[in-house]
Length: 404
Image (cartoon, rainbow, N blue to C red; front, side, top):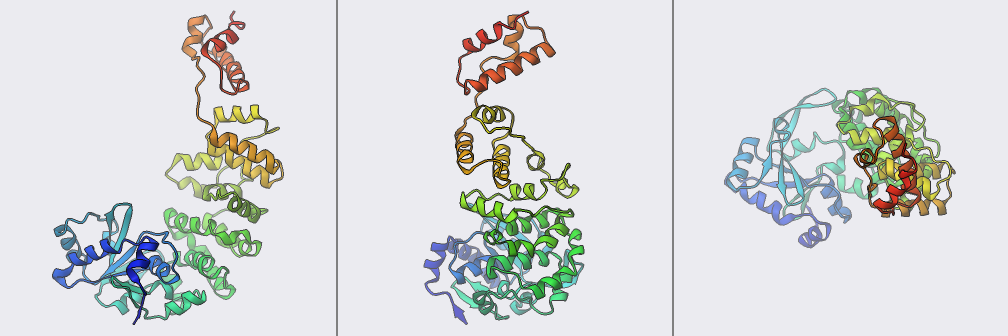
């Protein structure tokens, strides 16, 4: 059995809360329970990369015993995923997915009917890729039933068993294949890619949330600076988002965002659907109005002057303006220097309200309705030209000349 050398030190350096994980395991002592770390954290431990995911844990107890032990130890948890043999344990900033060892009884491409097992090998056989079936106990010992360590180090993305069968069990594995190809191999194996393509039409059976969670990781990958990599994703993303996408200059956008350290999943989506008059129906499934507004937002700059930027700051969310400026730069509409000037202005801008309200205008003798609306529009232009820096008296003196 292999072992992570200096396990406690490595965990501390990577940010894995091993002391608390041992506390969870200690709570299972009554039933001789044992905990293993699996998934992303194990990959990070082997590759010595800082963790980017919350720890995933598996236990060799059934759910009833697991919940009993956690309650006795007063360890906080949520019964999210309970019907799939999984719960979420809460500790500081962490949310641990704690899952009982299980084996699949029946699958339909989305969810599986499961049965509890205390056999680690049986549990490993239901996992997708070899490097996701490496188990690490709380002392750093590794159990590797499918030679996943070797695949991980060599950058091989290898399904456990027959790839066709594994994909049909859960079509999310198509997206995960491409995601791990970019993260671990830095390229896509075209043989497996072509195999996955046969099942692209089945991606629509997956929930909106599952698709978006995986595609966010795909679209934020650093390898998207390469045109060849993006080419391998065209069909995948169009089937996933159920829409034709515009990939022209997409690699340029990804490279530029990385250069200025402003990578954004939403902006990249917005860029891909930039030619659409209306947002594709797929994205309307989002529960957040901000997300929909961000994808819909279009700002038509004419000259990128200080006055024009100020006027847009008065009307739009900062991030909507930044999106448009970066997209315009990729389309060669604004130079790097002018873009930097605009971004600096926007980032440092603090919202300021015009010190004169509609109620003030009514008291001055302006009539309600269109008249007040017209005066407010003129006042806004004045306020903007003054760079949001004039007193209430200055505003009053400006509007006085429009009194009937």
